[in-house]
Length: 135
Image (cartoon, rainbow, N blue to C red; front, side, top):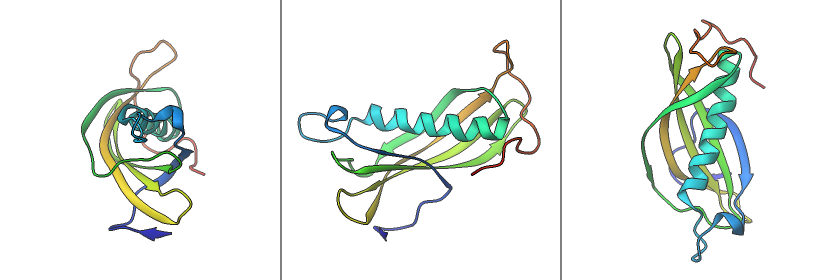
C-alpha cells in the first residue's frame, strides 16, 4: 500500500466499504457514519481488553483531515493508550484506501474512552492483562 504521509498506528480492527447510502449528494461520506465505524472498532478492541461488555463514555477532539468518498475502503486502527480502574482510552485512526488503488490517506483520529460493565450494567474493574488474545 502507498502511504500519503505517516503510517497508521495501532491494530487494524475494522475494514468496510463506503457505499452510496453512506454519502451526501456530493459523494462525500457522512462524518457520523465514519464516527459510528470508529465506535464499532473501539467496542471490539475494548471488549477484548476488558474481557466483556463495554460502553462508550466519551469521544475527544475529532476533526477531519480529508474526506471519504463512495467506494473507498474505510480502515480503522485502534490502540489502547491508557487503562484505569474501570475505563480505558483508545487512540483511533481512520484511513481511507482510495477506490481501486493502493493509496492510503488519513481521514481522522480521536480518543475514545470506554468503560467496562458487569452483567448488571455497573462499571467493573478492567483486568490488569488482556483476557482475550487479539487476533
